[in-house]
Length: 182
Image 1 (cartoon, rainbow, N blue to C red):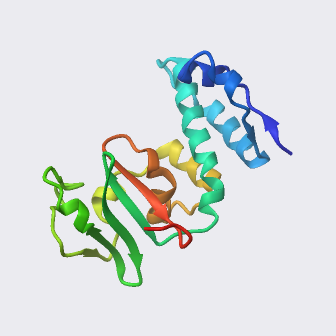
Image 2 (image 1 turned 90 degrees about the vertical axis):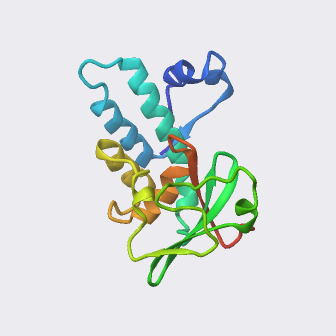
């Protein structure tokens, strides 16, 4: 059964017109996750409204991804700022990261990580590259994300695709589905 979400917190984050311009409906599953976030936040010594706003904003973004994550992908575009920098793939042997030639030809091209310097050759690893593991959520937020997106917490690649479209920092990771053009 869908429920309406109180948008007072949303207004605090996005401005006075946010609540009137959005109608947010979430599923029963999402309601349980929102309730859990309310129980965890606030932490002692933090701003109650600010913490709730951050959690609500993150949950809203991730709730939009629930439908997208139903069809798991084995490929992702990796962006550095607004430039499509490379392709990250889950393979039978592990993982592969390859910079796009168009990106490498940019005069101001930078590596997405110092551990993945600019190169035409693909990087291969049996485990997800540590740089990408470092982008993943942790702690209570990891628990919320895993339940919301129905992702096994041990599946780092699926977590990366589900959560890193809006990472803190310059790098973003977006899944490529078969129906998407690369």
